[in-house]
Structures are given as C-alpha cells and as structure tokens.
Length: 143
Image (cartoon, rainbow, N blue to C red; front, side):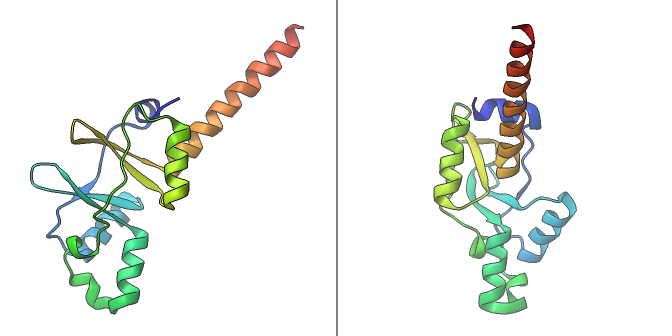
C-alpha cells in the first residue's frame, strides 16, 4: 500500500496560502476548511513551507496576539518533510512518528500533488485491517 492509494481515495486537493498572508488570514482558512495545516506556496505553486496548528500555538506563545499580524513566512515550518506517490504507508507512518508531525505534502516532479494527514493514514490502515479480517472470516467459513 502506498500514498497514491490514499490520495486515490481522498483526492488531490491541497489548501494553500501565500507567504505574505497574515497568520490571522491563515487561521481563518484553517477554520473554514476544518483542517490542521496549510501548505505555504509561492506564486508558481512551489512548496515554500507548511503552517500547522503547532506552529500557530508556538507563535502565539512567543509573541502573543501580535503574531496574528505577522506574515505566514515568519511562522511556517520552512524545512518540510515530503513524500512521493510511491512512498509506502509504512514509510509514511515512520516519517510522521519520527518527525512528530501530522501532515506530509506529496511532491511529484517538484509540484505539490496532495497532502496526507495522520487521519488519512489511520483511516487507510483501519480499512486494510477490516478487509484482512473479512477475508480471514470468509476463509474460515469455507473450511
């Protein structure tokens, strides 16, 4: 199982913000879309960073509400760990666990083609385990 299969189920939509937008604008986007992170993309669609709930909390803790008027580029995580369509779900889980993050953009040929969250991975793994369980029950029933 790989990232392409997860994206095949969830879709390739990626919510992004531009680096000059304020943190307040990015927070509004997160709330409206009911998501936990946004990709920070350049005008050409290139990946510049990622802004997560954790980044926002850190900025608010450091500078208070003044952070809300800061540009996203000042608060985002610039060193983004990414994956590819061929990345296995096991590799992705390892990346997320070791890096302690919950969102991983998917890149192909330098372009953002999706984003996978820990919730997507869990949903995929649960479906996989349920399918294995059904197959085992069917096999036992045939015996």
